[in-house]
Structures are given as structure tokens and as C-alpha cells.
Image (cartoon, rainbow, N blue to C red; front, side):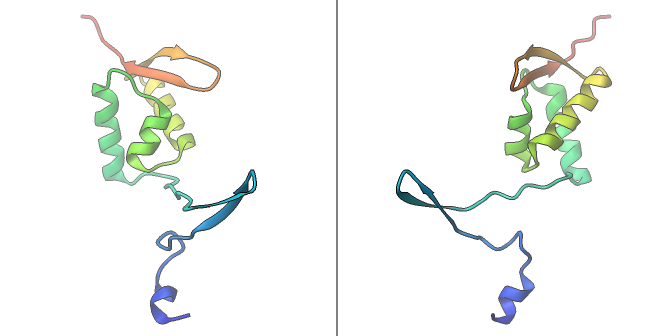
Length: 103
């Protein structure tokens, strides 16, 4: 091991894993996502939630590189605070939209 590889954290290293599927060996790089977003990312997510017509936990997770479970928690909290509402709910996913307040 050289000094440079010791300095790099586990997240920075690109690990190529091999997976056998139907007799074929496929190489892939696993995606490591953040458990909790930092304050700047949280502000961006809140702004995105307020102006989105339709938003899912998977969309948030992909765009802001956070885990899907974390995105679900963020969206549930926003729903409890009446920032967004549920449009469609299925067994696997929930689609949210910005709540329109009528005066």
C-alpha cells in the first residue's frame, strides 16, 4: 500500500466488484450515498419540495445523493408540516406535490 491509498477514505475509493449472473461476470461500482444531508443540501431540498409539481423519494435520493430512507423521512416531515401533500400512493412508492393553500 502506498501513502496515497492510505489517505483516501473508503468512500473515495472506487471499488469494482464482480457479480456472477447467469454465467456472466459483470463488473460494477457500488454507489455510496449520504445518511444525512448537510445544511446546504437540506436547504436545496426544501426549496425543491416547495416548487415541485411531483416528487418521489427516489428522485430526491438520486438528485441529492442521499439514501432513499432519508428522502422518505424528509418528505414525511414536510407532509406533517403541510408543505406538501400526497398525490398518489401505491404499495412501493408515494408521489408528493406542493400543497396549495387557498385564501
